[in-house]
Amino acid sequence: MPSQLDNPNEYQKIFHWAETQKDGAIPSFATRKNDPYEYQCGFGNSFSSEAVPGTIPQGQNSPRCVRFGLYAEQMTATAFVAPRHLNKKAWLYRARPAVAHQGFTELPDNTDTESCFLPINKRVHVSPTQLAWLPFDIPTDGKVDFVSGVKTIAGSGDPTLREGLAVHTFLANTSMERRATVNSDGDFLIVPQQGSLDIQTEFGKLFVQPGEICVIQRGQRFKVLLPDGATRGYILEIWGSNFELPELGPLGANGLANARDFLYPVASYEIEKEPWEIIYKLGGKFFKSTQNHSPFDVVAWHGNYVPYKYDLTKFVNVGSISVDHIDPSIFCVLTAPSRDPSAPLADFLIFSPRWDVASHTYRPPYYHRNAASELMGLIYGEYAGRSDEFQPGGVSFECGFVPHGVAYEEFKAASAQPPPEMRISKDAVAFMMESSRPFTITDWAWNSDKLHEHNPKMWDDLVDNFSTHTEEVEKLLAQGVKKMGISNGH
Image (cartoon, rainbow, N blue to C red; front, side, top):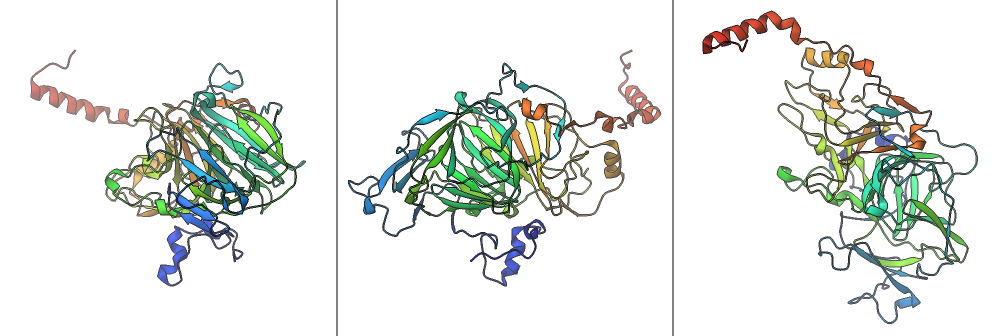
């Protein structure tokens, strides 16, 4: 049985999940003490799960008669002829198939959500300005559940083109009751920031707390309960791709997010002969379907197309043990490939507690311009990499090739003397949703009273130190010219 936490922030105070194992002094455990569910482990594995033993037919998938009169239903997420290592599918054995519904009704446009991020859409905005948002308010008036509380911040592309992405926030104060949702456009990577999410899926249940993430893939039905009350968080939605573990290259077999730490649900069915509402998202539009049975009546299933979760405190950080900082790709938890083999559609990176021991090295983020669009959020704690107000639940955004870095005061302090070995991001986890694609900003985010700009005055004091060495430089140049026996080009 799950236990209550002595401290609600217990898992925010640890350096790494290894601390919970007490150096082998206690039996090891894979989930947080207050997690009520059992799981299977292994990223991308082919799983099999039965709530009633002996349900799944052996040696075939679709027999003439399934045990207990269940219906066999296949969910295929790739082309039938996709190579074996890319082929994604699942077989579900359920009391009633998903086809048993009462048709679809188009819902009114939700102007707080967006799916077309092409500049021809007048509801999105292009800007090179470094933007940020204070934490968005969770509604207190009326009942707003997870699916109604999704608000879009930025994105690129369009789901009908089968390549692109969107970044949303969710702001909810009530659980979904006899109401489920399904995203027919793409995959959701969900990042709770305040309040836990008790997520029921067709494959079983996932309990996802701040400091954990989950991925609900395209076409999979789910509903969200709020055991802690009001909730806020982030969603990275991708179209035309699926999340993968990044390659490890010279790291070898282990490190970053290890495959065995990804947890998958076990079968858990619900039989209800009551009216249910299913909200479909397709092409960015919303539709409603009704049915007189629970969408979670799956008694058993097998396959590799299954929702999953991951505890970010299990991430194995790597870095330099001599000098300089390695590129932020070392913080990548999950990546989604694009049609360009050299540039991913999306990366999900985290900045969590770790040691920094690089000697003779400038410690803050170095001044840089890079091709990627970067959207950052803070789950909990304080993050030193931002030079202005950056709070849990907030957002910071920089588009590609816009220069960024810290203010002069921080540069000067970091350059003055070598700091000792130090822990970075103590009691904090920040993340970055990064893409090779240019983002546009939605009307909802653009007009939000939480929006503010990174004040460029923070860089006014980045003085020209080079000019104070003019005499020394000219002397060196004169010596070099004399030695080579040439004029100085004048």
